[in-house]
Image (cartoon, rainbow, N blue to C red; front, side):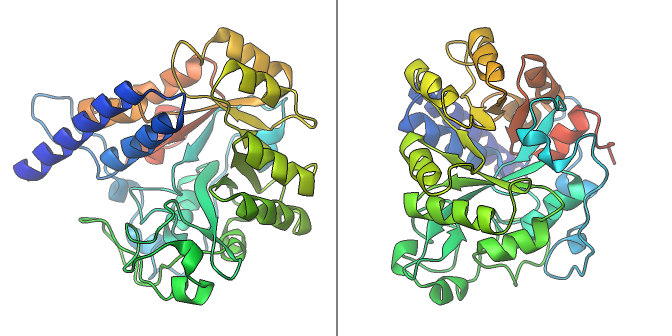
Length: 343
């Protein structure tokens, strides 16, 4: 255990140095924030000199409630706001978005992770969309399957049948039965999520974004899902589906001004934390068009929870004017804002 704890700390420290060096305003910053989430995904370390540990994931939800052995029902608990709050300017509730569905409960972007997020009461699950060789939209963060599946190669070179034949890798030490999990499609996701929570579809492939926008429109899912896209990706999606709900991610003041000028405006604007960008002026500009401010906790509240056993940072980030907070540890964030009791 001591070796494993030391490894976790070294990994997180390396990630922090890399993240601060790269910043959050360009592609390198995006990679750093993804690395941030990966570095802390394995759970908290233990140290007698620190405050008592925060409850672990399995103390909030037993894996057999959401993994491949679970039979349901998968119904979200009562929330302080309806699903459509994310695109309603009059709704001021603090919303929690779970990164890559809900790690550390289940493998990233898996249906098991989605089921755990529903049962926790998460408002939004973030996931990533790409295309297979036969044009199917699937949930996958990396361009290749190597890291998360028992296989290799680019998803663009695999058919849906070939991709879904690959078993999903299970992170070391993760509790639960995930033998049924493979790469999900949009119909598989929304068959579980519709009416329970909102799905954030981060566009990793422009054509996948267009097809996802069409899927949301054709299945009347605007209260159940939206796109996260860069300017060019957003333009392509809006060209095909002019009213599709989306979240933009500007990386400069010029891009922020362009994002807030969209018609209809974005439901949310993703801003990387930092005093040079996520400040009162930025928040005011975003709120002025009826959009919500969305930010990630990877550089602040998540590391504080892992290293210091302190979950108060999640609520503190909301206090700065953030409306939607993307987190690695949804259970701790929900606990921090008073929506999930400690077990």
